[in-house]
Image 1 (cartoon, rainbow, N blue to C red):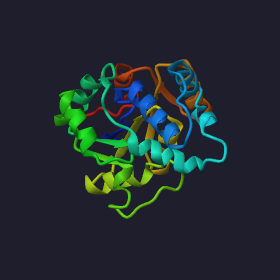
Image 2 (cartoon, one colour):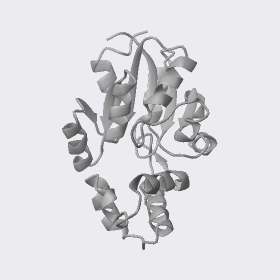
Image 3 (cartoon, helix red, strand yellow):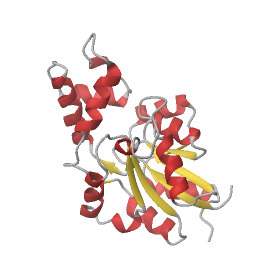
Image 4 (tube, rainbow, N blue to C red):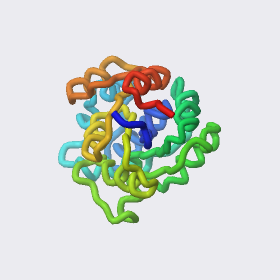
Length: 223
């Protein structure tokens, strides 16, 4: 591999741990579709096995449900995932561009505010969400397809070399591959890791300390 030029970070449940935010958005989408919210334990069980679609009301449009979900997803309960700050410091000393790309359909300034709150905004060169798709003249080919935003970030920052994406979900993996990047899956729960493995993810880590070791292993952190 050539030297790393761009690091693409998924935000929710990757850069930050914010399961409660995820739960609140999921509950709000259920309520908007006329269904009572599930218990937090039930939500966690479905999230761990990628089966959240099971609770979508019968007859509801699944794509419509998830679009509502990503429009009401907010940042209120987030904490940085272990090792993120250290990884960001390491890659920025090598002049690697860092972007956050989120599956939310809300303006980027919500996440930018969160980054400032956590004291890491200085390490991030851009934040792009699915809200930006129309602004860049792109569209999704599948639900939560972030590949157009990754390609846009590559163009904007003049990237011609290696791109690494770190994410927690299979659609992050598909998006990264489609945009020509190398994907590193992050999963602190074994069930999520198994889901990524089944999808074909080769590199799996539990936190950003392990992600940093993975980048060293791949020979990408060269000056």
